[in-house]
Image (cartoon, rainbow over all chains, first blue to last red):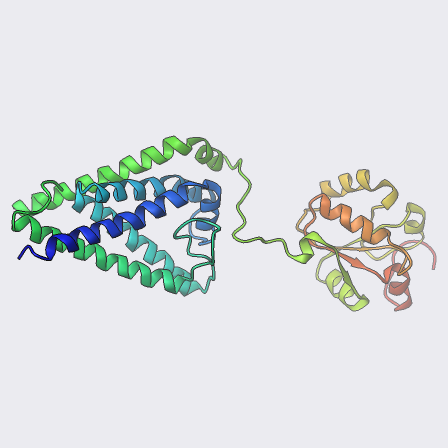
Length: 150
Length: 166
């Protein structure tokens, strides 16, 4: 029962942690550039873009840190899952409106722009990881080998 | 009941997590956010939005100039006040290149920077319209064209002119 569950759980947890730590860190480097990327979605009012740009990266970083240190796993997964749903709704709205902008998922202004479709599928994959992580954790706790908290 | 209370605890902790993230983010960036709410920051362009029209005056031919003016663009006369008085495009404002700074100051009071401008002078031989167009762009006008044929081409085409004796 416990043979492959623990390594797979930790793999999922660390993968999600890495993605969200990188996302949070790369977006907090340049507040103005990230606010510009949010503005390109043309959803929020002007100041709202700055509000999200100022707060979203730290939420991502905190959730990533909890996963990294194996603490409060389920609340962190709820937050990450919720963020992913919001991101996916925003990406679908891009496709719906035919806007061709960089998704703004990671570091602003570096590398090739990432299309909404690619970002959407990537987010679907991350959602699968979130669900898998949750499920594996509950298996581990039931078998008595899992994390004590969260 | 146990599962429900556990779910509530998870959601509560998730909310605390989000609240902490928001508070930390706000405390790190409160100055920028307050600036944004006060409208003190320049808008972020989604992409490098400076097209050729915005940075460099585009030349237009007679037909295009006529269409632009019919669509509401403002004709701007770069020639001297004397030649302007002797005849100019209908509705034109006089912005002589020799006194451009003061004249653009006056123009800015009456004309929004978003309004398309068609600058002209005495025809193909004169460069005043181009030089004035560069100044207008420098001062913030975003859509500035140069009608290179100028007043002579306009008059030769038999189009209406204003002022002066023909």
